[in-house]
Length: 569
Image 1 (spheres, rainbow, N blue to C red):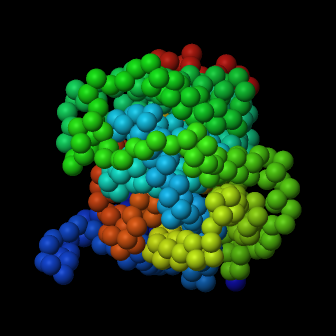
Image 2: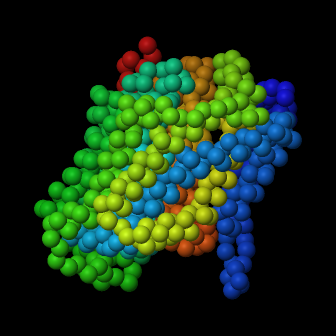
Image 3: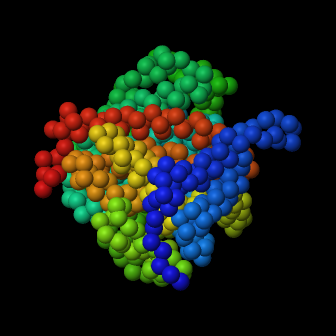
């Protein structure tokens, strides 16, 4: 086969080329959130099932790759298969294992005890959302990343009695500010690798942007939760001490660790301190008026709290302790390096060695590698599975309970796995065909306002790829090159790719599918919920990336003292 060199203006017009490149995204969004259809009862709905919407997006992406940018059809199809395989192993594996563990705690009754213990800490739904979606979710993001916090926190919130839609939306909003330092700092480490900029400088720069949002997100989260459950603004401000403590403790830790230690432990330490501080606050302070969900008693969730011994409560939490320890161990660099020794790596056919990036996305023509790493042992999902199997042994599941847990998990995950494969495949087609770079390049023509759009490019990258790490790998070089051409600080601009990208995490199809898999027991209902969830979180995402873009713009002009002094070395 002839090598394929990516073209960034295939139609001879920047406008037409950009519109063509964006067509698959528009198709996916239309069918996911806007396409009108009626169900069997004749009720009008917006958006179709996620797998069908994903299929339409994939077909349009492949057609654009073949007929617009003239990518060989074999390579276009191969790119989709590569992405689908990556989605199954990298993302689907995590969600399946997490659901397996959660199902075990349900069928053994242990989750009921967990629910009671959280209720004893605080029966107020606002506090529970802060504790699980934000603080605990941030810790899991730091340890594992790649959709794990949404899957685990979402399942826990549904188990506590939260509405599935509300649980999904809240967990997606919460999983923003910690993402740049997720999976032991992988996004920042990747950004340093592709840009050849100092890792510590990029970590420090991100740590001078995201803490503002770590303070904001708990307030945003609480306001969204209250609004979705027919509350009032006073219900938000009544818990301001909890909002300040959970967000403030995380933000301060995030700033200090990212600036003076490094990106690897930022979220883990921040999440632990946030949970601890919020728990301590609950010992000395309670909201004056407990907030309940519609249909609950006014004094909190309708959970029958019975007397439990300390050992019963500790045993009920053991599965989650095992999970925490497992994902932390699996993320440690020495452990990861050891487990990666059994990785099966091979060049992906019809793709590796055939696709090349070209200037101005990269300084010179560069091979776009397509090496598939079947790192099943080092994958975060294997760590979660190890925790699930250990949990089953600890809980002494009977043969029938093992079979029930496996059957219930497999039935629940059929549709989500199909959707994950489709949307990850779509992301790989846009990456290898270069259509994502066409869209990114369109923003580089904004001149003075480029720092604002640097964050938007990162946001777009996460939306397309489903990962802040992948977005950094995709657009990191482009951001650095553009910054140098416009005489802007490269550390500020490239860090903005990651910090702006985190605001796109809540709207990428992969994260939404993970949320529906975790929060909806009925797989058909979950598939139909993707569109409504996307519509609810979209404007939150837009508003947050606008705020991040304005912060980056201010740091490039009037707040230049916030840029690390060693950034331009």
